[in-house]
Amino acid sequence: MAILTVQGSRFMLDGEPIQILSGAIHYFRVVPEYWEDRLLKLKACGFNTVETYVPWNMHEPQPGEYCFEGMADVEQFVRLAGALGLYVIVRPSPYICAEWEFGGLPSWLLADDHLRLRCSDSAFLAHVDRYYGVLLPKLKPLLSTSGGPIIALQIENEYGSFGNDASYLQYLREGMVRRGMDVLLFTSDGPTDHMLQAGSVSGHLATVNFGSGTEWAFAKLREYQAEEPLMCMEFWNGWFDHWGESHHTREAEDVAKVLEEMLEAGASVNFYMFHGGTNFAFYNGANCQQKDQYEPTITSYDYDSLLSESGEPTAKFYAVREVLSRYSGSQKDDRGSEPGDLVLPEPVGTAAYGRVEMAQHASLLQQLNALAVPMHRTNPEPMEKLGQDYGFISYQTRISGPRERQELAVQEVRDRALVFVDGLLQGVLERGNSTGTTISFEVPAEGTELLILVENMGRINYGPYLRDPKGITEGVRHGFQFLYDWTIHCLPMTDLSGLSFAVLSEHESSVRTVTEEPFFYRGSLHIENISDIKDTFLRLDGWTKGVAFVNGFNLGRYWNKGPQQTLYVPAPLLRQGENEIIIFELHGTADAAVMFVDQPDLG
Image 1: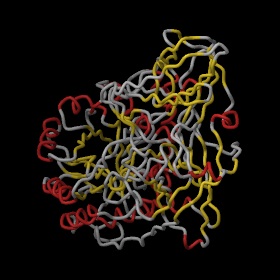
Image 2: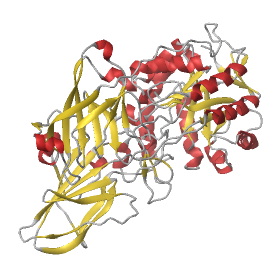
Image 3: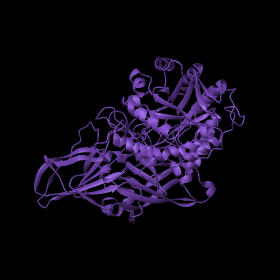
Image 4: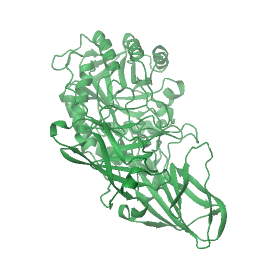
């Protein structure tokens, strides 16, 4: 592989000018079996480079415990891209944003109340150093200076949108250099004065992120960087969705027009995203630009990008390929192929497996001890203090009686709580709910059992409220009296093997009301022949809110408020014969059955 340098206003690759034509694919949002398919489609579209973030929270789920296997095998993803003749841009910042849980930061950082994020806080930097001491040596052999495909690394991500600690950026830069990261280093920020002033690192390439307004964005960059190459590191050709919104789309013609403007200016570009993929499990992030406006991101990360969530070329793919073919005809890859002249891989295909009955169920509240070892605390501690990262957490206490009716106050719930009194649902408390939902109850002479089940809906990934502990973060009051002596069950939902399922009666399977307690439902999808295994989409009409699992793999959240109405099920998650389907439903369903369809419905 060649070495990327800057010469005046041009990128040079081993002495020859190059225009970087890149697209983002996040290996951690795509099952590994599909990496090659997505990368080949990137190349067939006319791109010469793939870009990816590196999420710290996936690679160091607990302090000093590392994961670089399966969907976290960044080394294999980079090697595969290189083998296919693509260059690679890696953005391994401690923080990545990406609409990813906590912007890629590990949740366990929040266990330390004194630690400050993304600055020269010594405790934070010590964690970064330990992580980089493991990650960067893995990347070293993959750098172009070592014969690998990585041509550039990012120092930090959109830092000017968050802070102005120049010594922090310099510390990261020096840490990379000290660990042998001797390829081109760069920063990326929005094209505004305060962002470029605070996010750039002297002596290193600055790039800008935008979705339109090419001339204005590059003019602003030129005010701060007069000579170096122009590059849009994130060309936002689509957008992401929050629960309760409409699905975002953008016309292919508009995307092609803005791309042509950039290429006319001689700029390089990285499409964010080329292929979005999926926020499997509990890895979706959330936005909160104002304190009381919490907005969690949906499970799909389709992003209305060039490839759909299931990897199919969209109208944007063909519009972009046509533009790229006109601007890059003279460039050839290492195999002599011209960009855009490769044949697309054969489609995986989709299948509509139809209706699957959920024949069994298991009560969450009755089997808490089968899922977690109870812990006893004076106060209802948040997840991070208990070593939990994602999922749900249950808090139980007993209130003596008699007591008059008083309001239950949770200080504060993050992010959504089901409140049960003596096993009966009293209501739901939601963070950022402007309707002012309240729950009040009286306590009989014999006392009452209070249980609060809290769902972590995704930590904030961008903005001023990045520090976002989950569960109950301060305390619980009945009236003005704080309640103490709590039994807590951490429910990350990583292992459901301890559950005992019972057969649903005919009445139970036909009608359930929205006031039911949370239940797990289990059914089986039978696939007769291995040749019948294809991508499919899980549709949950009649269900309310919860999480779906296929053969133990967490597909992510569903919620009837939309916009997303189906969950993507990649074929590699399925097998010949019986496939276990588990639905964890918080509120009940009108029909204890699910549908597998052959088309997505993102709203």
